[in-house]
Length: 205
Figure 1 (tube, rainbow, N blue to C red):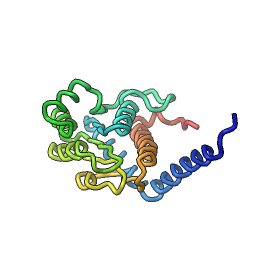
Figure 2: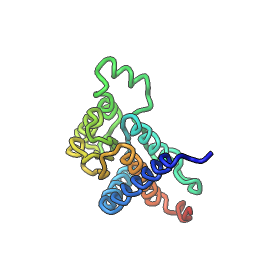
Figure 3: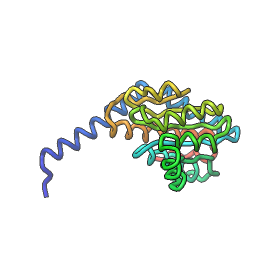
Figure 4: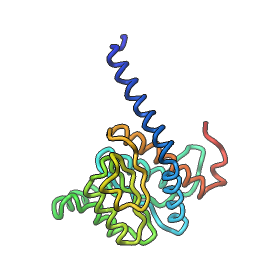
């Protein structure tokens, strides 16, 4: 069955917008991506861990990126696990906190309970306005952790609480999320290359 011209145009426009947004990230945010990877490497080398948090699609990205570190990133690279956890995995804690204290406190309490000085928190918010992510970033800094944001829509007010951040230059949620995961994969590969250079000599094409 032939696809309607309007559907073809829609899909083409979405792909072109995604590519254009990633090109802007590559032009404007490359130093941010590299610096985020560097500080994560410093933390992991010192025995720290990387915590991730986000809501909705960003919660899925948090879990995705944590799994890349904890389990495996590239199929040809066999190496030890790296300490990483997504703060969205525990449904009992999530619902208990939402019921007892309020959902906006959840990531904050997880950081307070699990975070240690020298750890890294990566808070993901496409709008930059997620209250629970902002509170987690604040809690991370109070605990002498490093607060990092993967943000969009200008980044504020979350950006004000980050020591390092990637702010995707877009106001479209889908385009921001697509760039977050592309940048996230780049960060994860840089981390793996730094910590396991002997295991990453083969370039995957």
